[in-house]
Length: 70
Image 1 (cartoon, helix red, strand yellow):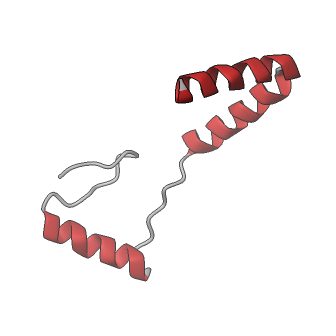
Image 2: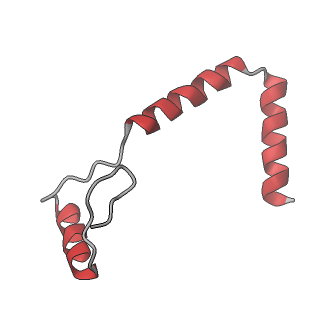
């Protein structure tokens, strides 16, 4: 049986997976997508943003925009 990103069990065949998705949509099964990695990643990003100066943030944003649009 395949495993999801956090190691949870997922059905291998498409019909069983469709049934599971339907149960999640109706609330019969709860699908928790939040993990501790998500929380720590957001906390780390916030700490990094507070540590950077305005010029450093601007340079990072400029580089990202050039990569995206260039």
